Length: 115
Image (cartoon, rainbow, N blue to C red; front, top):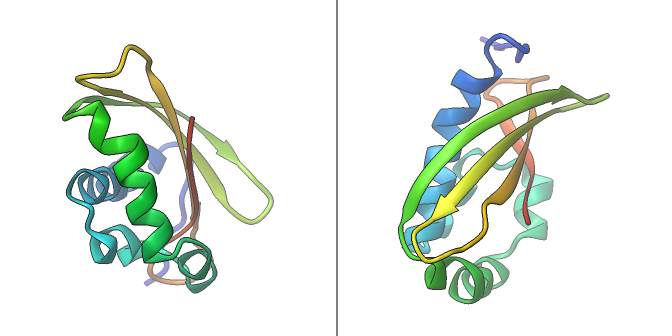
């Protein structure tokens, strides 16, 4: 069954996926991270690149304090969900951008960026 992402259900759909993604970053679990990835994105984010990014950027920030949904943007062929993420040892709030595709079941992650 294909589920269509809308402005009304984007947070609910995205929150489950974001929980897994953040948990995967904190535990350095590539299999969990890529569970919802489309094949193209999984090829781009190799296990080595992921593990390096986690060691350099995520682990030093400590445990997750909060993950707040900020909003939704409809793109031509995907949906962009924005999240404010705070970690215990970071003085900054991070913007995480989750890109989802709903044109086939199950919903797939086509991109993930944080800054």
